[in-house]
Length: 264
Image 1 (spheres, rainbow, N blue to C red):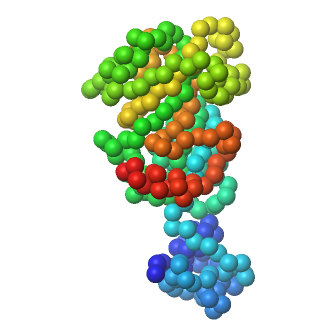
Image 2 (tube, one colour):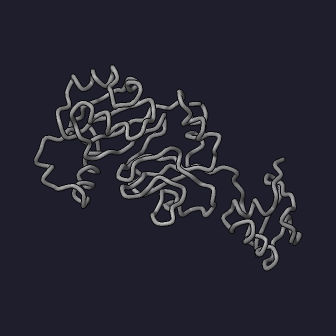
Image 3 (cartoon, rainbow, N blue to C red):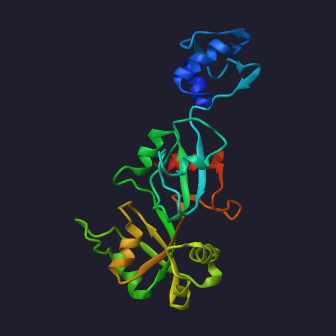
């Protein structure tokens, strides 16, 4: 049995704020197991009671989990008065407590977990417990075996300590679909001159095990390179798949939920 207040259940279902829900209770036919209810503090068993608004049954999920393929130009925040956020992209639900787990830079694309499960988010992000995160980085500058060794040893990005060991894979163009995403990004960006495509650019996968500010870009900068395009492709055992285009999202599967819960 899971008891919560009726007004919280209705808020979680995206029907408004607490004050708006109080008005809803006065003006609409809201029932619990067929009985009309007007008191917002009424306790409801989310596992066994049937709640309906004007005859439409309202389901309740305490926690929601979405896997988003973040597009460039969107900020990683729950809300912003001026700009569109990653949570604004989640159209399936209107609940107000969703937030991104961690952040991707405005111009970074790729995997982002959106949820309202604060306990899980804290465990995924807490210092010393960061899960592995892999990025596709399209890089200008010399990337070679020495770069691999430097990243594996840790590099100085002007923090108090060197970065933790990171794994770098240098890619050929037929080894990743991310090359196409990078080209599309460059061609559509008003910040990058397409002439950069005439220069030597290298596609890489970089796996890091911590989450410092602008870490991937700063690591490449430390070895004399510049990241032109960045896309996160995995977080722990969660991975982006080809059937989730940039800007799209889906709910996590039960198997994926088991995976992220077992990782911390």
